[in-house]
Length: 376
Image (cartoon, rainbow, N blue to C red; front, side, top):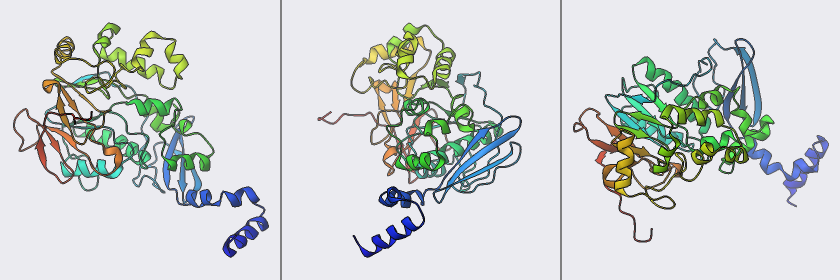
């Protein structure tokens, strides 16, 4: 063993930490660099309990909910904690201008850059989109290292949008539902370290008693803005057999969040909603099980009184049009942390009624029809 290693071992034993700590010391070094939080929980009355991991150490604060929560580490802005979230009664909206993206997966820097480049937020990350609507079509969670920051940012941006006459729609994707039921296969290593420092599971950090967990449980899976349906993965024609309104579908998801697979399979409606043909998993517009023709999709949209469906979930290198313009795919591979695009409609300078894709350098480009590589 290197001389420094023996010295460290001697210090560890002298401190009474034991051999297990010594052999795990690379993990302890990693933890000492972790900055995350806050995780805020509703307490009895008007009190909140906030937790952070700062330089790998747990920090905690209790205070009145009405008091501005000052940042310590992790998310860098003061927070005004709102009352428990109520599901929005509406599922259909009219918007004079629109922006949308999906599958951010913890890549906060790309989200900020795209929104700033196209005038959705200003340099201080405040809402700049007036009465416009911004849709995040699921999968904020998992994979990347800045999930907490994104969620608090959207939590604040939603309030700012409402005050300006606009709207932010955060839809649930398959990864949000996975985290809420404790399926953490895609969790970033950072959050595994957070679990260890805080002494609790990541799932519990988003329990129904947490501010962000409560807020996520109020989010829809389906919304319609103007003549466009937004959903994380897609709608298969069998969706109509459920005989449920969009509001009822959202309520089924809301009531079932956190249930394990066995409990889901006991209820036929939930088995479909969480299955491969369901709205948060379906890939049949592009490939795989349940592929539909352009005609079948047209009939589905006609019955749903929509002109197109806009989805994420299936990663591509840009935003594309599919199925004769009846599908727009949003997942531009932001999850890799290198690039991404933003769907835009009716922004100043754009042709009336035209959808365009906004790039990281501020360009606004036509949406082209996807052509699969020969190897697909």
